[in-house]
Image (cartoon, rainbow, N blue to C red; front, side, top):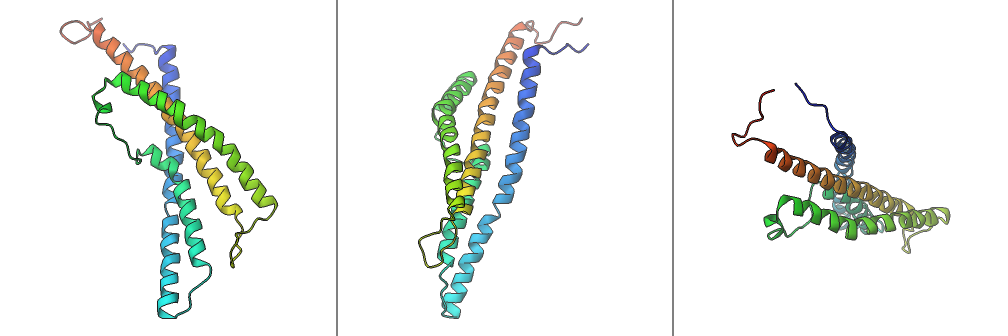
Length: 197
């Protein structure tokens, strides 16, 4: 007979569903934004062909390359964070008990990452709005508007903020599951199986 789930287990399941949803959205967007790197490659190839073959360098290629690469980098931050693509030195960390690992992740995310992304995201929005409303241009011969890149900054940090919340919630649910498993293991009789009802 199946046991009815407790309130904590139901909350834990709901939180896991929220995390899965955030992960799926950021996973899909990360794959879409990854295509920007092909745009960077295309612009570089165009410049090489125009400069080397036709001896006609363009005024816009270098600036567009920098802008596209900046957008690409910031827009895939949440995707990279979700996939654990950032450098981490965990030689000592991996030797800690599992529950302590969850707690350390919670503390480091809560102290360093979450305050930063939630502080910078609204400022990126202001930064974008100022550039959009004043029709701010780059100080170059090409004079391209700056607001598209600044919008990408806002979007990238907003997605990173949401992913940071998801990662913190994962640590909480992981800790709850771990503690529940330990408690369940202690409750088992010496044979390792629950007594038949």
